[in-house]
Structures are given as structure tokens and as C-alpha cells.
Length: 125
Ligand SMILES: [Fe+2]
Image 1 (cartoon, rainbow, N blue to C red):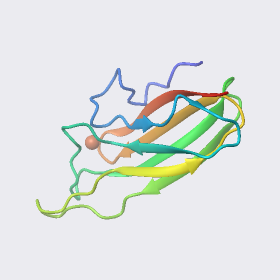
Image 2: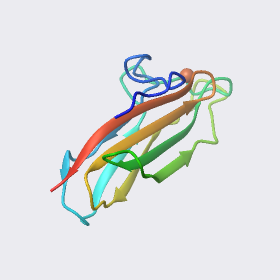
Image 3: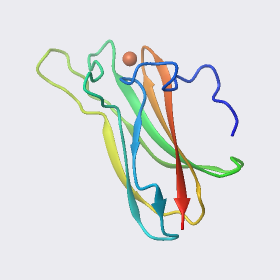
Image 4: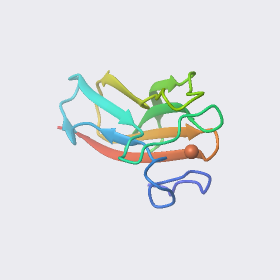
């Protein structure tokens, strides 16, 4: 696999509050629906103000050689807390099915800190 471009904030380069988390089975059956959850959420959380917030979470799948990439889902967050009482939780859950082993790529975009990426291998049995 190729190395992530330097403009991406990977787990090694950035704190967890910007790195998305991918939750799904390590192994799935071909053409069987399974659930994938992507979130930004460790115990420290991420600011959710008009000035600093997460705008987008996206999930992509690529085959093992990385030649084909497809977007599975993308979520835009449009509301942000003007005060201290409101809070958005940055997460989405999608049902998906795949036919070949590959790689899931979750991307989060913060309006201040830019793109962050998480990658997870998924195996079709
Ligand atoms: Fe941020």
C-alpha cells in the first residue's frame, strides 16, 4: 500500500480527536450485509463550535491493490453549537456488503485542522 499524503492527518501524525475510528468485523462473508460505524470520538472529543468543528465524515472502500476506490457513505454536519449547551456527536452507521477483501478508508474533515484518515483492512471469507 502507498503511504498517505502529507496533508492527511493520520493517527501517527495527529491526536485521536481528529482521527476517525472504524468499527466493523475483521472478516465478513461475500455479499452478506454487515454494519460499519465511523466516528470521531475518543474520551476527549472534538470542539463543536461555529469557529471549530467537524464538517464531514466519509467512508471509502478500495480493493486490495488500491486501483479501485468507491465511496460507501458521506455525512455532512451542518449544525454547530453557538454556546456550551449543545453538542453534536460525529458518527454514522452504514450497512454495506462487499465481494472481495479490501481496505476501508474513513476521512474526517475539521474546518481548522483539515483532513484526518483511518484505514482498516477487511477480509472476505
Ligand atoms: Fe479540529
